[in-house]
View 1: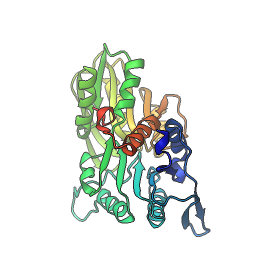
View 2: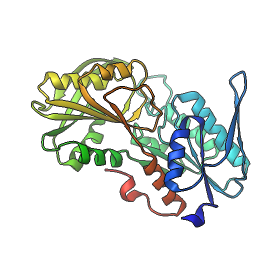
View 3: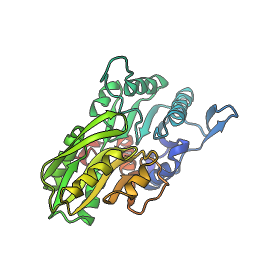
View 4: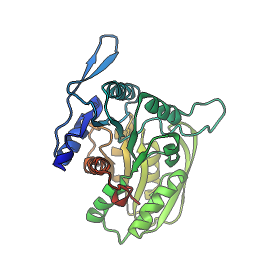
Length: 315
């Protein structure tokens, strides 16, 4: 691997510095030198402090909170293109605006398509991301998309820490059935589904269980937890229907207030996230697992022109 370190460099946006440092540690390389200058009116400018001419650059930045981090990433891409980088890969562990993936009612924007257009116009050569809210977002891009799955991290944790003999996989809504079913098949356990009625964004009006959870250890599967209304309502409903215990896992800890307090006060004995988004609000029953090894391996394989479908695309 040492012979390719001069050919690629890994840089970090401000919000993903903690993750990029760990990725570089896994790659056994130093993080690239870059400075972001901020002005009094809120504008900022990106400056690479070393030559990237002819290099393959990997720019790591999750886009949450959304606007500033996305704009910083776009400026990083633009600066890299103007500095004659050979190949620009945007590494976006959490891809914001992914919930706006279709026109589900009249006169609405499709935010995920707009973000794809912005990234491509800025000059990316490749996107590396994880657990998109909707798989079809990959089709919004005209550049290669490497879509990784946190299931490779979560299933290892489940196998090492959770007894599968009494385990049932559950999804807090019908839209996540495909994702939850993949876990159920991989772990060899039953699947139950929650059907929810949502009257407006972040507000669940009604929820019902399809399946039997009585006396079972339930593991709820989701991709994003925002205000935690759905996941905690589902957990409480499981216990009301006779579940022995309820855990949950989700790839991205958006965790807008009052999510942390909701999880702490819910029936959940454990809530698992990845560190795709920085989370510092605590919570005794909340745990984050690192995806740095997953992204480091993806970067290594891309730089070596190796397949990343074996073991990194998940279930």
